[in-house]
Image (cartoon, rainbow over all chains, first blue to last red; front, top):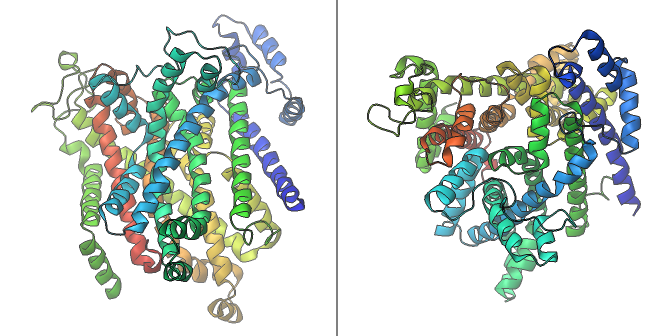
Length: 339
Length: 281
């Protein structure tokens, strides 16, 4: 428990650094948001000055930072100029859409990549092995936005299998009552079959797009790690003792191969958080990525700050989970040794 | 050196895909150097009479919504995309090697504080960080280079730091110190050349990723601006025509991007095999 606590404390300086970095980065954004905010070429200097005062932009930078930190501690991320809403509300509104997409893609990638990597490692040089190598080399080279467009062309335009790539739900279907914000869960909860099917249909292409890139490093690492453990002495001994093949592969080889696989999972997840922006752009997905991008392109500070903070926080938590997973998988490694 | 060449030949012969990657790479470099003088049409001249034509003998890759030849644009774009990627990777290699080697060599408070900053950099999803940086530095090609360089920097700093902290206690460093070399000279003349091979391998593995990153940034409208031919921006412009079945606008720049990254990745793997044969997977 103390180990966990110490690891949690270690996050604090990183998060503080994240807050500073986010603040500095967004404050040196070009353009004057006060001018943008008044958004009228006839606004005179006085109006602009008033707006600037209202936004607190006339204060010295360090005061702005203190105010920013104080607001942050109150859970106030500022207001978006674009939507006129508090950023926290906006982010909460859109976060489930991004989370649904990312988690679906992540699950899909794990379900495909890990068995593929294991199968390739069990029969090196076989057809499966070559397929695995091809997928892991080609997958890394595919830009997500190109894969997404290719999938849209094939499945929407040519074959008509997928719905139009416009957002999370067919615009003619009323959205289900919002409980969790996850459309699939909400529609299942309210028993709305039509909305569930539509949401699932809309989710398939973007999730596949994201998963394709993630499959590559995951399958590659699973294969390499499994090859290592399958060739080790303890597996040979297990085999000589006549244990069942299933037991050898799952409880002996896979269990010991898990560490690097979990590391790669963490890396893949962080990559996905970034790729969100691109995929949401391609599929007009109403998530936090497209929200932040719109704000960024129109010099709206607060949403960009909020988005970066949320992304960094999610990322830090994911890394923490990965560390904890190490501890569960292999108690010898990880926290205790360097704690 | 002879051994290395023999190994290179062996790696090329053993896996024909490596040869394909090498040829692709040479083709891309050729396009980057000679591009503008190779292409049949002016890449930014518009001719609305032939807008949105599918691939044909006159226009191999078709034409876009303004009647510009997609083939010419894809070929000419090679130079810009490769220059961004190479410049960014070289920049982060140079800066990262110096910073990493210095903190690894001196250690102490300097090491701790720089490592903390690196940790903070690594706490952001890297593409998100690059996005914000391009917006902050101003929407230009050089910002894309700097942003890509900065998000790559942590890997080089960590690698150089690790390599130097292993080597700084070795005999030849000790000998140089006894021989009267100062810290700066030991770092510059003794340590940096020694840690270069793993860093160069890292750089070549990074190259594909740098191309993807730069194209991704211009895809979302940051960095390169229309009408400059660049793969990411061409894919972005072609994206709106995908749903109506005009696939060639986005497909060919996307394909070029994919092949470039593919060949960089394979060559990076090959180079790693040559420099460090033990790490082959």
